[in-house]
Length: 78
Image (cartoon, rainbow, N blue to C red; front, side, top):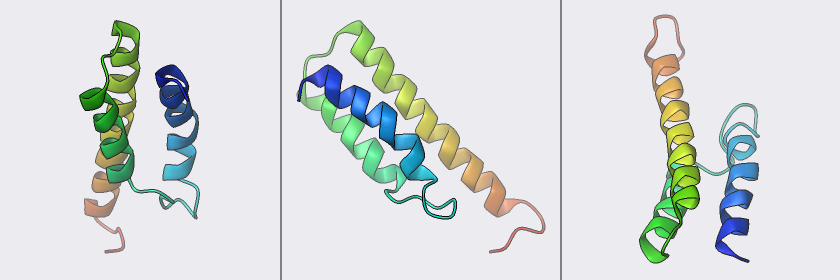
């Protein structure tokens, strides 16, 4: 698998896996973050690849922020 294919694979499956089981992650955000950070750390990336990874990390940040807000709002089950 090439680096572009690996990044494209993460882009395709990350979001569905975060919401796949009754709205709960099949693979947690930490898994995806670690996978993306490994790519960043281990391989020389083009500007486009860096942009794609940063965008995916931003999606993880938004997902985690949304979950955090949902669990801390009044009336939410704890």
